[in-house]
Length: 219
Length: 219
DNA sequence: AATATTTTTTAGACAAACCTAAAAATATGT
DNA sequence: ACATATTTTTAGGTTTGTCTAAAAAATATT
Image 1 (cartoon, chains in turn orange, cyan, blue, red):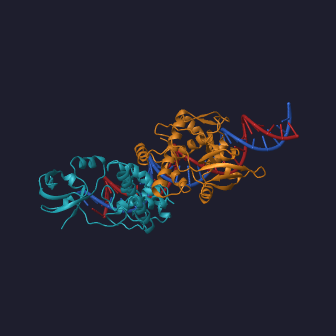
Image 2 (cartoon, chains in turn green, blue, orange, yellow; image 1 turned 60 degrees about the horizontal axis):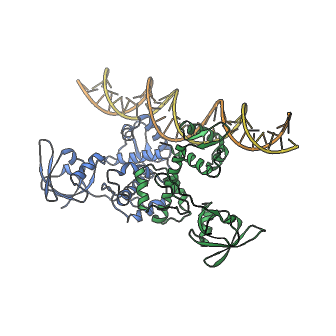
Image 3 (cartoon, protein in one colour; image 1 turned 90 degrees about the horizontal axis):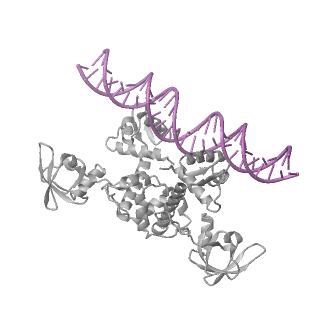
């Protein structure tokens, strides 16, 4: 149906569109995909003809329903493969991305639905991101960046914004893992760092870390 | 390292080379890959420059050591994925080929070695073909086409020549499966068909079937 | 509002992998 | 051995996805 390259554009537009529903800019896509704006324009024209994307010159793009459906399916595959790699093949959560980027383009409905069953219909991938079901329903969970919480607020680590292995290995080193309960003890106005309580121990966290860790508030 | 297209050529040359060590003809490759001879010539030149293949104009090609190593690795991946699909994801042996053709191009040493371990280091794929180990060693097992056996010879079904779903489903229907013991009861000179004994029942098999089923002789 | 800057698009090129049609080399038949 | 047939290669073209450089549009600055 779609080439690997087309799929990567569709996925990227979806991810960039998450925040604003407005047209996604050519430059933003180019930056994410490590390519040139002119290449993006070319591809956008093709995707527009294939009715995956709405496009008006100089106005940016947005996904059509077909485009969204396609994107969600790719994301479903990516995340299910990540679960497989971590749960069955001893990958750690900072090793899965590159391989999942390849596996997400494998085309077989039976494969992905059987994989889903084999993994026991997981709801989230190793980074805490929700896995769409086979009808494309993506469950939404209220989450906040740790950096936005106030003193005395409590919550559960539920996801990461950045999936780089540097960041994930940092979390491993400090035993910050998904599912852990935390409480904000102190905010340092000077450098934006946080003191949090986790496993009954105090831990200091830089502002950059706090801006890459998602918390589900527990009232 | 190699593009998907290059990998398909390398694999095809390996498979065609199994019989004769001589140069594989351009036309043979073109036929197997469903492409044109001129395309094959183009690709062969490229593979020759990459030292995967020995090539003299009009003399056909053969794989270098690098080429063989590459081919065996692709075959290892293909066959391990087939085992995964059948043993873990409820695929039947006639459904795996197409998906394995895609999965064999995924590039990750860790992935394939962990998959190997996860599957318990299988020695053969669902069609009875041997799986190379991670150093590229392909175990050789003496096998004969059923059609070459004589009356009273006994053996074990150990593989298939043809992997089309028509043939595999035919075998399923008649409960002919890998590992089953058979004995040649009669050969019909007129049409080349065979009467065999399997599960203590007599079964008649056409010459075409007999030419697509491999037997490991017992004594 | 006019100018400067940034963003986006167009125009033209390139590499990969394929194609058709024609030419060259090899193989075959008598 | 020579004509014919087959195989293989060459020459030139197409599509996909990329690029650079320049032009056009939109946005920002003063």
